[in-house]
Image (cartoon, rainbow, N blue to C red; front, side, top):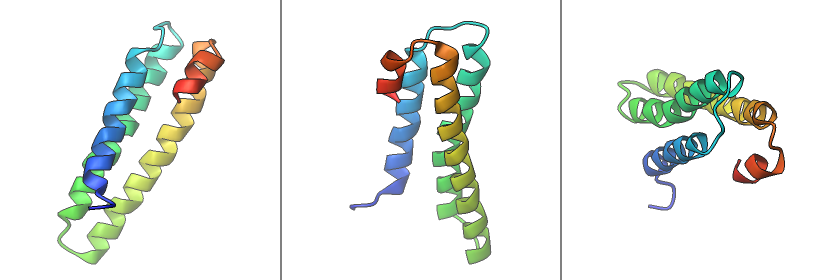
Length: 94
């Protein structure tokens, strides 16, 4: 299937984990990494819940959560680049 979002969101979560493993851990990056992993991996979990929704209203609500988590992930990626302090190296991975 061209738009297998269940698989794509799972791969995205795995890529977030791989990215976070490459980041230098320091007092600034550790909490950012934690938030990034939570937000980035919850997109897929919430999508799976949406696909099993009991109603159209429930589906829309869960998809809205996916969108919020995706925006939060984007935010933490940006913040992580700043917190890492290595500029181009990490920026190229994000």
